[in-house]
Amino acid sequence: MPDAFDRTSAAGRRFDTVLIANRGEIAVRIERACRELGLKTVALCSEADREAPYGKTADSFLCIGPSAAAKSYLNQDTILLAARLTGAGAVHPGYGFLSENAAFADAVEKAGLAFIGPDAASIATMGDKISAKRAMMAAGVPCVPGPDTALPDDPAAIERIALEIGYPIIIKAAGGGGGRGMRVVPEAGLLHEAIALTREEARQAFGSPSLYMEKFLQHPRHIEIQVLCDTHGNAIWLGHRDCSMQRRHQKVVEEAPAHGIAPEAIGSVGRACVAACRQIGYRGVGTFEFLYEDGAFYFIEMNTRLQVEHPVTEMTSGLDIVQAQIKVAQGDPLELVQGDEQCEGHAFECRINAEDPDSFLPSAGVITGLFLPEGPGIRVDTHIHAGYRVSPYYDSLIAKVIVHASTRAEAMARMRQALAGTRVDGISTNLPFLRALFEDSAFARGETDIHYLEQWLKQRRAS
Amino acid sequence: MSAIDFSDPATIAFLIDALTAAGVDGLEISRSGEQLRIVIASSGEARIDLADNASAPSTMVVKAPMAGYFCAGHPSRPTASGSLPRPVSGREVLGFIRIGPILLPLGVDRPGILTKRLAEPDALVGFGDPLFEIELPS
Image (cartoon, rainbow over all chains, first blue to last red; front, side):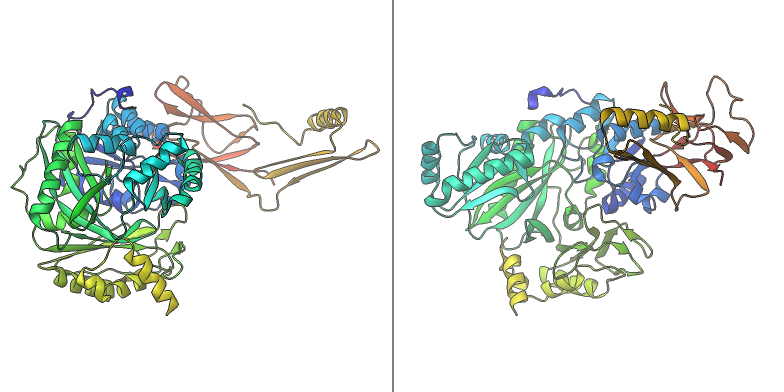
């Protein structure tokens, strides 16, 4: 409920110490940005992360709880206590964990600290998919056909809505996200069973049975727009990314810019995103996610945080996005106006996961040997080293390999070279799978949509 | 909260009486380093096993239960921490974790010899950080 939050915020207060309420590669990334801005850092860890390398480089390092995330990285009280004990003036939530938790953002600011992210009201508005869609429609952002209200209980009324949209449709949980709490309905005969199942899933997984309905797009690409806003009413968009290469709704490879989309087509969408940010009083970085099919964009959700894939935009724009969001939290006005931003060349990011390349089951254990790629246009964001123990408690992302080159084809070639030069011994990783994917001709031609990777894997298994 | 001494015959007798009165067949309690099992026989006679776990270490480390500032003794009695090594009873408060005005006592649930203080007084400690080492009687 947006109105439940006090919009007077701690944003804009100067601070000299940032508490990083996260772990892994993003903790390293935030620490680097803070150091370059002359800020001190407080790194946190759970029992499982006591040997994390960023603990040695942070100004303070504090264990806040047991290995289970619920008792450490998701424990709001403990994190606020750590901030108080260490004298931190701001909290950077990174991504995942508490980064899109409106109550946490509110608690941070009520404790007199700056939350490096949007205010609680914006997070709450965009966290509810129905209210987000309503806000976007009001701002003129194109949305997937379907009402901006929750589905009624009356079965006949639901049938009428589905007929108006036209099958196939998709049922989604209002509180869902990350690919969970949704069901495709190809024809009318399957509608009511799908509603009942999804409603129960939503009730159990998200604590709310509220559902909404949209047109199901058959072959869309996943395109997203990066925005950056300050607390002085300035907002810009920093270009676009294609994140269509997904497995089970989890992104595997991202690139910037999204290829083959006319600048004038995406320009109007970018401007609408900026208008929406101004309308909801958004601050910090955010990402508008769209489905793109047959030349049209359809808003799906906004992520009110830093994205895992932000480096590809950094590589093409030359802007340090993490530093920019910290400056916004300190109350600085944006240093760029729309038109100053640039997009040069092409960038790819591969997520290196500790998982079996065939079964995708997580692989924990000690990294006995590590070789990371180096060279012009190659960047690696990671927290691992030889001897590092990959914990079974958390997300399997252990590194991001990012490349930049003049053209998409050159960037693909550079990524092939970078992946060939990457070796992680002692555990299984998805490197063989990524190397094979970058040899795929359809991917090279850019002829892929969000379903492509699943089909590619199915064919690969069959052969 | 002080820990119950399960090797105390009076405590065991009390538990047997309580179990028998309640018609309960038995009781098993395990905690760090020790295990108590009472089985009430059908004739009303109890069998008692009280054993140190085979894997129990000869030393134990008292760890911080949460983040805060380590106090080796009560702040109002700065000399209370004393010199080491020294014997400690099974119900002694060894020090505190200070969080603002709150003092969280650091207890030990078994007697032994306090041999080492592993954190500096007034140091900021995290969850699970080692604070004291205690040598346990064999």
